[in-house]
Image (cartoon, rainbow, N blue to C red; front, top):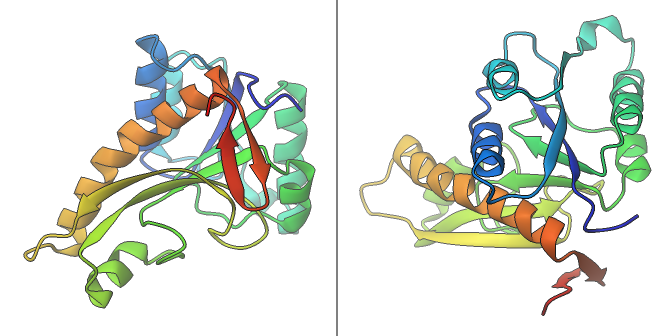
Length: 207
């Protein structure tokens, strides 16, 4: 698999703010990828409308209720990804845990963004856990997806201070500002440079 191929699918469950940031970056010519497919597990996800308005050629809702198991749902998604020739699978607020068979099928090709500096504060309550622990910096991480939740090799990170008056919402809002810069920038670097993974470390080809 060519690690600087440029055909992308995005999987979303909700508001689609990271999808919007990626599509805007593509439209400006800053992120040289081709978003050919957007899949959502929720028919009411705002990300579907964002994708349609941006002219993504294939925008598809797949209802998990139509499948008996998570593996069957993931197989349907996987066949769509292959049919449309998607080299990279970008998770953007996708709230379903991927089956291990799906992760194995696309190993090294699935990326996610997480609202903490991994490996600290993995999981769904990352922002709350960050505040509760009392760390002085937080941020976001773009990482490859493997079978361990939020456990794959790190592609890029962005750091912000945690302020004394921060609430969960205020900290998350500032982290999202960074996410909307870091995700398209990382995708652009993947398309332009490519990388290899040595042990756990991602080494960019231009480095």
